Each structure stands twice: as C-alpha cells, then as structure tokens.
Amino acid sequence: MQTINLAADCDQAFMDAVARESGQDLKSCYQCGNCTAGCAYSQDYDIPVHQIMRLVQLGQKERVLSCRSIWLCATCQACTTRCPNNIEVATVMDVLRHMARRAGKAPERLVKSFTDGFLASVARHGRVFEAGLAAVFALKSGKPLQDAGLGPAMLTRGKLAFLPHQPGGRGKEEVAEIFARFENRTDAAPAKKTGEDAQ
Ligand code: SF4
Ligand code: SF4
Image 1 (tube, rainbow, N blue to C red):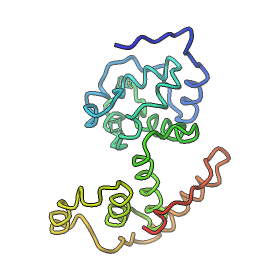
Image 2 (cartoon, rainbow, N blue to C red; image 1 turned 120 degrees about the horizontal axis):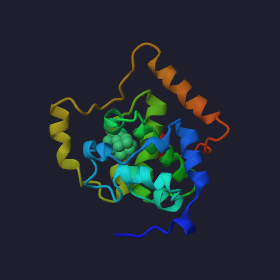
Image 3 (tube, rainbow, N blue to C red; image 1 turned 135 degrees about the vertical axis):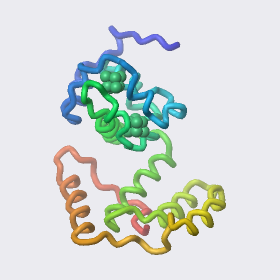
Image 4 (tube, rainbow, N blue to C red; image 1 turned 90 degrees about the vertical axis):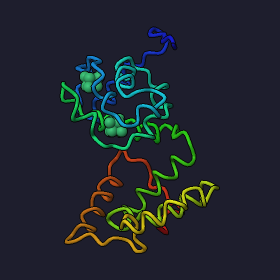
C-alpha cells in the first residue's frame, strides 16, 4: 500500500482543471466503487478507476497523469452508466489522457502510437480502417506477426475489410468537421503528423 503525503503533493488547481475541462462535479464522487466494478479493464489497470477519481480529488496530478490506466481505458462508458452520482467518468478519463499528452506524459511508445494511429485513421476515413491500423501498429510494435493468427478468423467473420469503410451521407465530412473544431481550439495540442497518415 502506498502512502500519499497530502500536505506535500496536493495540487488543488489540478482537480479544478479536470472538473472544468470535463464539466463534471468531481467532489460528488463518494467512492462507492461501482465504476471499477463495471470496468472490464480493471484487472489490467495499475490504478482502478474509482481510485483515479479519488486521486484527482486529492490533487495527485503526477500520479494520475503518469498512470497506465488512462491509456488502457476503452471509453466504453460502463463506468459512466453505473455511477449513482451521474458523473461522466469516461469523460474524466478522456480529459486525463489529453492532459497527460499536453504534459508530455504519454507513457508508452506503442500506446501513444496506437492512439495517434486510431485518430489519424478516423480523421482520414470518417471511421477507423482496422486493417490499415493493425498493419502499421504491427510494424511499429516490432512484432509484426504477433497477432497475425487472428487475421483469418476476423476476415471470415467480416470483422476486417481490405478497403476503408465509406460512411454514408455526410458522415465523413461531419467527422472531419469535428477534427477541425478540435484543431481550432485554443487549448488543443498542435496537430502531430505521423506515419499513420498513410492508413
Ligand atoms: S470507460 Fe474506461 S474506465 Fe470506464 S468502464 Fe470503460 S474502460 Fe473502464
Ligand atoms: S461510480 Fe461514481 S460515485 Fe462511485 S466511485 Fe465511481 S465515480 Fe465515484
């Protein structure tokens, strides 16, 4: 068990910033643990999501922005739907990821590469092109054949396409507009050109 030195480490401005960016009343979290109980990734997190909420309340900026959990979160919203205080916990996790990026604390090269690649693929095609993302990520991982065995089963079940999906209607344009609005935010991190642009 780790001990937190509240007097030395508390950064009240951090909690205020997370509350402001997420639009959530973080003080209303009373640590019931429902979010963690419903999170499919709890077993892989280094800090469970209810403890992340508590650490944010306690202004533990360094520990929160350096944790691995925020990069494993799948934004599935299970925590949000289970919270008895209507806190959008998944939004809080998203805000923490953005803060970690801005603070230069995106921890693992591959996690960061996957996130960049996913967003670049969505920006380019209107939705993710799974085969392209998988191919580039496999190359960057240095283990290109690690998940190759999954390919045939995914193909036969229609889970992988050789060409990008084409969103109907104005789907692609609407997604592009979302990315443009984000890029034009005054607090947005500069756009990062990556090799995933080819996906
Ligand atoms: S949104 Fe993230 S933290 Fe919340 S339940 Fe899903 S994976 Fe867990
Ligand atoms: S479910 Fe809501 S109130 Fe309960 S620990 Fe999670 S964030 Fe806090």
